[in-house]
Length: 139
Image 1 (cartoon, rainbow, N blue to C red):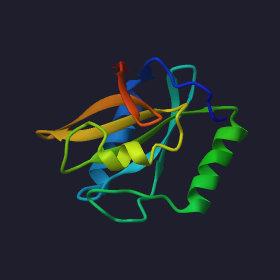
Image 2: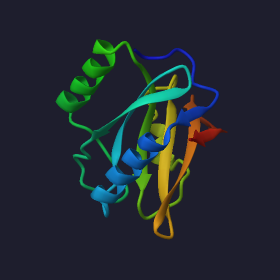
Image 3: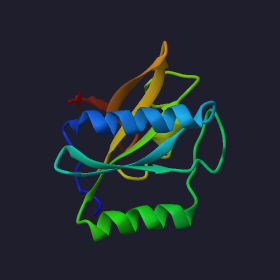
């Protein structure tokens, strides 16, 4: 379920991208959050989660909801490909809090931010406090 090494890229199909953007839209003005299930570097499912902080600048997930998401991963033999969240008031780059709270170093971190009326996404590996951008492909 959890990966040992982070992916070298993150690949989403159009339906997954629309699901991410739809969840982010539904959560504005709060940060949206969730999990990307996958195999290799390809997303196979988007699992939206509830931001229990109801904040525009931070997110957290209830333990029972996170447990249910991890159970879904296990039941489907999926990996934790990535963690996603939105920055409705900021840029698509990790904040100091995002770096400090990167508890899954084998996963990608996808951050969405507003670009006009659309969402812009960027993906990162965050490991031991070091941030490296990785290619994000949609389509």
